[in-house]
Length: 138
Image (spheres, rainbow, N blue to C red):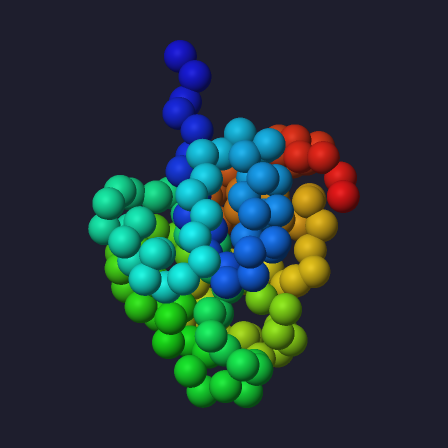
């Protein structure tokens, strides 16, 4: 019996990045819901359970923006025990406390396919080497 594909929620207000990330994850065998807003993420989480949330810090004008954690924190809370990975183009040092804030992982943009799959696999407790090459290279 084959295990069901893991369900992932991708949240990013950059349409192109959101769609590309979702496509890469679908190609790797995940079931993906992609949304662009905090409200859509909260609605998705109210409607079903996900195995992982991959989320950009929505609305943060810069990494120095004191509100950069606001939407992330609300979605993290709504997800309950769902592992949540922060993915952002802001400098990683600005998000150095992601683990202390309860997030399961951090992925810096730009990323390659293997980095994305490794971050997702690690947060899900999967073998990242089992996913290498599952998605096409860009």
